[in-house]
Image (cartoon, one colour):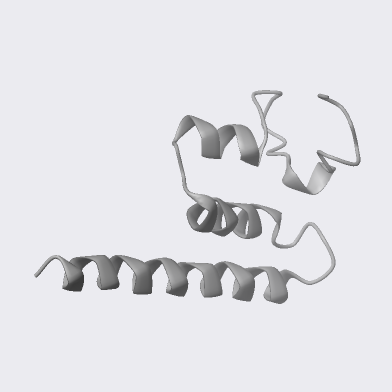
Length: 77
């Protein structure tokens, strides 16, 4: 599936080398869905249609992850 433009569009590539894409990075660091989306939107910001929209999406996922961690911490008390 490597090199399939429909699955790995250029705006998800790092342009540094051919070491992988955002999905590879998230798997290596074992990021959950929310944290993976933060990485996805930050790395594609400015490479697709609307940079501000992508950064706001990343911010929304970051807020959700913070709220979830706070919930877990409060539940443990």
